[in-house]
Image 1 (cartoon, rainbow, N blue to C red):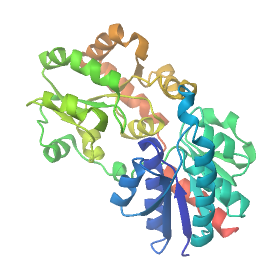
Image 2: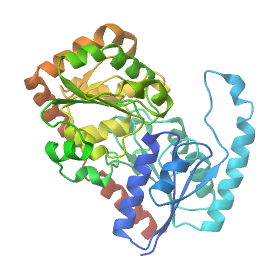
Image 3: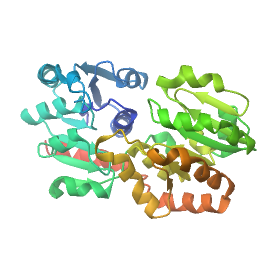
Image 4: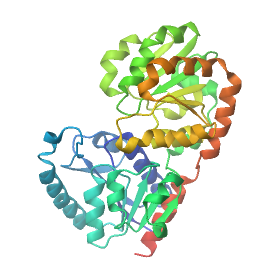
Length: 362
């Protein structure tokens, strides 16, 4: 089989990396597959996708800003033009199927595919779905969900819980010693990994900076992903035990090295942390639709598989929670064991199997 696929999704790493994981698995199973990505102009997918070795075309599209309505004046024009662009792309590429992983660009692309009779598959990462996927649900042929909690939002007849696709490299076992050698850090020290998402998290960065002395007093080695937006502000804090980077390219090594993780609660991060069995303190972003990050993390917290501090209480609650986890090895082991029960190691293969079924029945 030589399938031709268009994969669309982006805006944040939470939409881009699942799309790339699906594409990589398609190429493993069908080496002669032809894959085209469609993203949004001036968003991170326009750099990340070519870096991963795939072609991408950009649409002139952006999200609807709920906080600043003046920014939406061009939205109708952008939407209309992006639908025309998507029509042109689909007609010229003639795909066997289209995959949407959420984000601005996937809306026009999956909409046009449905109008032209091209089979489409949606992949929804969150417990509470994004606007784009909810609007496209009736038009899609299959819907693969990252969380069982999302089932209530989609037609049962075409929905299946697969878990979220993760990078194939995460499935390869790496010892802490080897990971630390790769990263150039001391494997004999306690290692704290801090992640704020692909763009960075202002509040997490502030909390880490405010408690940097406390962390160093416990002789903790810090891998701190501050995000591209905050690199200039926080990278000067780098020292022997504090490694500040805008973005972590070698996430398998970072996860393998970490004894404890502080993270936002995006669906992709949670899926990876479950797979790696990492004890985690989540600080969900409040700046997301329907507060879905807190909902993503809550089921883990309820099952003693994670700890969580909500952002509006973080100034008081963060350090006691973090210090408690650093000092309590038995608690970390319990959380690390429990979080693995939420892992879906075969998610990417299951999604590609569903996609293959769609193409076979085309």
